[in-house]
Image (cartoon, rainbow, N blue to C red; front, side, top):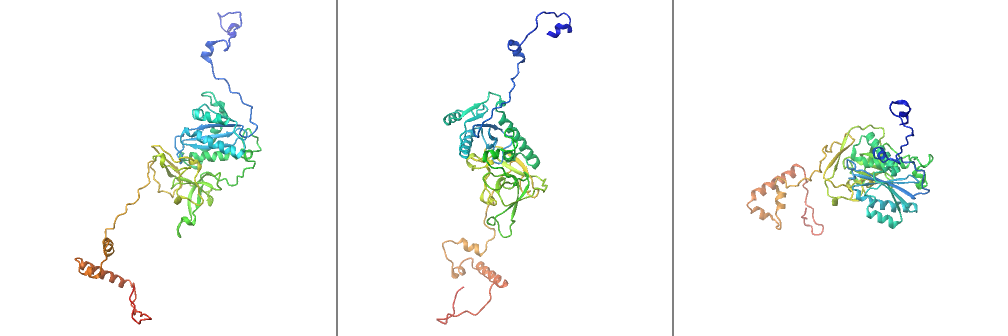
Length: 426
């Protein structure tokens, strides 16, 4: 308005300076108001577990091998140490928070003082609020539709998802292994310098007091030859089986390995990692979601003893609860080796039914004898029966076979030393 007064246009003339502010103009607010800026917070906790950030990411468009659709992230504000859990449903959030609380408070000998989350229903249920109140934990929540107030955890979610996506693309894995990629991304983030804690330390070092040792790291998705223990194989069987490296175990000294045939994850230490081999072929892994929840066993991926390789153990990314999923669709995803062509490329591939055993079509003397139960035949019974000729033919054929194959040699009958009579026996 002031520029208009200074002669930019004609016919406009006023003496007073125009002073219009949003604080005094309702119409301006109704037509122009925007969100207020989010200032950077300089406050930082002074010790571990004083403030814990948390957020839930998902649902994913594909179920993981353990049938998870979400991952739940906890970040300690002081150390930036991340802990991830994989969930099938949002209502499992409270269960995993209690697991996390018991774990970290036992390890650090401290208690959680403040929990910061968004205003979602999974964090604001009456059950969680009552539990936090009983434990004396302050629950800081964001305003509705304002994830910026939980910015640290939101940013970590983005970093983890981007790293996991790159791992999948580089390994040429498809989306059913997203949970393994996320778990590996969190493992790497905890062992690398992070913003907010300085350049000369890592979250792992602040949390445990020890520097991380990374000489065991290998390329994600590398082909791996896994030693098969002698108890699991026979004399001329193969001594190794081909799998793929998909991560690292936290509680076991071993690598997390995906078996494309069994469609699960195991943990083993006796491995040869072939990082320099370019295995670009694709092998289908089927995620079958048609089983009911009660048929599912616990822990990130069900593994039978026959499929267990070396000192393998179940994986936690396949959901430590009623693991394995429960929906009505199936997702087909791929891994790579070219020599494993026995898997079906259809998403609804089912395990083949067991072979039906039937009686043999042929009927010989052995079968005839086996069919007679409760009676003992004598030679007189056979020769006086209506099948006399068939029995005689069968006996002749059997004796002829013995003779042609040199089954025995004729020798003199031995005598009993005491009685001097010939012994009779077989």
